[in-house]
Image (cartoon, rainbow, N blue to C red; front, top):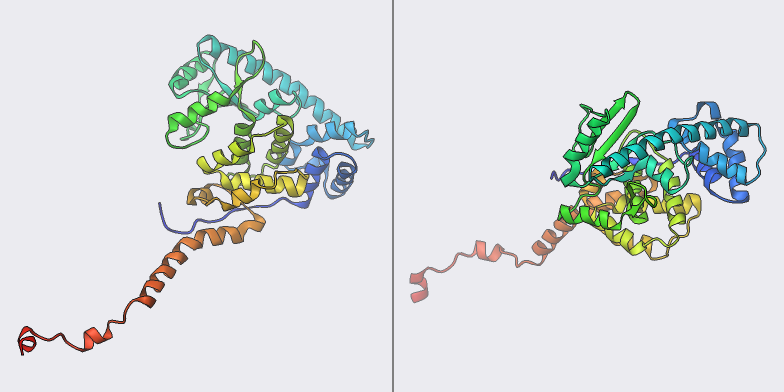
Length: 349
């Protein structure tokens, strides 16, 4: 890998995004205050796509707080359209998973559909399907999906296989969720901790820890978009899990080179959404070295640029310091150079 310093990309929430997250997820007066302030900053009719995704969740929270506002009618309409669209999507997903299971192929549901399965059917608009299958069953899964009129798209990547059955209906299929050595062991660990979706229903979901890791990576992966809904997903996952396995979370973050996205997420959850994180977790993450591949792949929080520079420059500076120390304490060779050694004839005298 090149020794050049990687370009750093910063992740920063705007004031409007922070207020929307607080209005949709906090409780009591904090949520109501955030709602009032957010209204004064934005026009609901022209929201960015990332913020629009949170509106069904915002409506549920405001409704639970008894909010009466002219905007509630608009939010209710968005909520109901999301519910109806998700019903159709989940019905199609159920058929798809059952077909794969009948062919002897198990699949773990990822992404939007997994969140709806874990929370409720209106939690998140399902924009596409995302499935994880075992490496040995990948080709079989593709063939079974083709039998259901899905077509492999030309947009292939090293991570996902893209399929679609119409221009707006996409499915992403993959065989690896996390990368590590040995890869077979990493893959099997994901399946070992996976949870069946429902009794007598086809398909699996990730364990809360793995789902949180996956969500952190998606949220802070370097891209043009800023998916703030990933922060909402992380909070909901932690709250619903009841007793998250924090030790496994930071251990796996180190193994999969995801220290940076996990650290970013926990900092934002603490600062913006008042999440109580065990006191030892963040210090432990800060003590772990971050690989250059992480700096290349993930965004850095706006306030973490100094940490990035320090982490990136420390190895070469330490090397130079060690070289200087060795030169400083080495015997000066001047006398040996200026005064020639006596020859054998001179010594014999």
